[in-house]
Amino acid sequence: MSPIGEVTGRGFVITGGGGGVGSAVAAELCRLGAGVVVCGRTHGTLDATAAAVTAELGPGHAFAVECDCRDPASVETMADTSWELLGRVDGLINNASGLFPARAEAISRTASRR
Image (tube, one colour):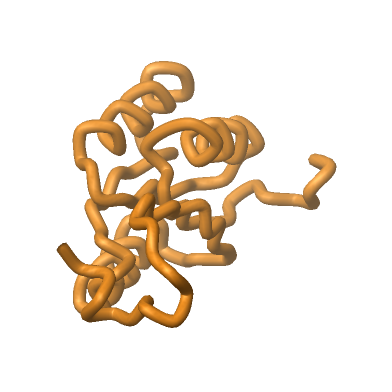
């Protein structure tokens, strides 16, 4: 059993999964037997993460799904796709960072889009 509990056969979605912490968490969860969907706004980095996991562990462990977490329709599509790819979603690692500096009172779904 891993320090975070048994993850074999479970499915996880990782926002901001294309690089840094998200990519590292995705790889480790896959090594522990989970399946992951890495999602974010930049498809190239997501593909690179999924390809690195596939190169190490073989196909069927990591999947890249483009998603803008600021857009509810994009999130819905990502959620549906994640269920299709993984067969289940047991956890979410909310690692996305918007890098859109703004005062908290100015943030809304429409104000955060550029």
